[in-house]
Image (cartoon, rainbow, N blue to C red; front, side, top):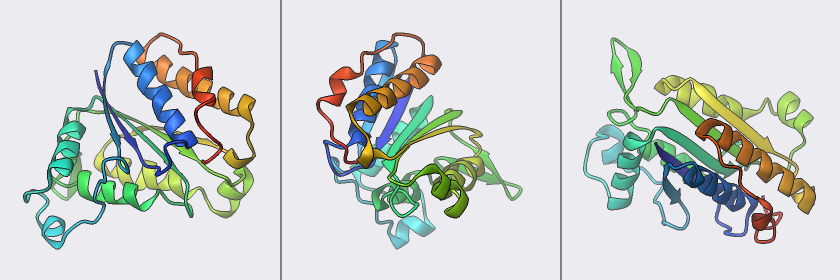
Length: 209
């Protein structure tokens, strides 16, 4: 299987990067191929042009072209980013605007969307510093609505598994190790079946969420 992993965090020492590395190693240990894109490291341009907006199939830069090709070839999609103001970072929003476009991710047939992707499952891993009660009761968990309903349900991918790790800034090494083990177990359970020792990543990555 070809697994697409999208990471949106500017700090290479962030816990988001630790999650990404665990995902990569778990998937590879299970014999699959990883197409990994660290958007900040790649200097991905999140700004959609007027030409792209009205003609999604117009020529684009090489990085965007590669992202679209990898999306088409993906059997599963993993997206990793922090919760900033109840939203993904702007670079992730730009990735949505420029990559999940009509003609690549979906098409319209009789005013209904039809999915063009072979991927039928999406994993979303988020980090935040908001407690669960405030996130769900006061803020209404806007990321859950965004990813599951507004984006992937619209496209036609209905199996979206999302996990939010909180509160990262107050976590200790034991907690972060347990979180990474949970990531490993979730990914391993789907892609079967070599458990990864996640302790190696804890020494490398910080509490920057």
